Image (cartoon, rainbow, N blue to C red; front, side, top):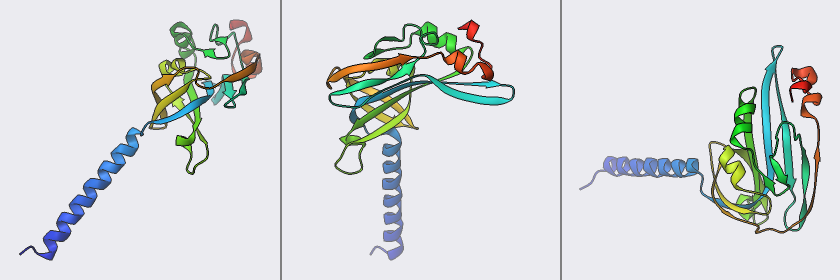
Length: 186
C-alpha cells in the first residue's frame, strides 16, 4: 500500500516539474502576431559625467488605413529612410554609430495577441538590427518576446494598408550640442 507521504512527495515533484515547464515556456515567449506600429533607434552616450539618451529616429503607424508619422535625423541615419515604409540601418552606419554611442533598436507591434482582453493591444520592445530591418510599416509579423526583446519569426509583407505619411527631419546633433555632440562632425 502506498503511504500518504509517498503520494504527497510524488504530487509535489509533479507540480514543481509543471511549474518549471510553464516558466521556461513563458521565458521563450510564445509567438504573437501583430502589425508593425513603431520603429525607433535610440542612442545613449556619456558627457561630463552624465548619461544621455535620445532617438534620432522615431516613426509610428496608427494601424489599418492610417498614416505613418514621425521624425528622424538624416545625418545620423544616412540612407536609413528610403521611404516611410522602407526603414533600414546598414552595417556601416551601425558600426559608425556603435563607435560613439550605445545603439538600441526598437519595434512596436499591435494586434489581438497583444491584448489581455478581446480588443487590440500593443507592445514595444528592443530588437536586433537585423529584425529591425526585416519588418516594415504595412507588414504583419509573428514575433516572440524573450528578456524584453522581440525576435521576428516571420513577416507577411504589406498586410495592412497605409494612407500616406508625414515624416519630418531634424538636427539631432544641434539639439544635443550641449550634451557633447559636435554638430560639425555630423
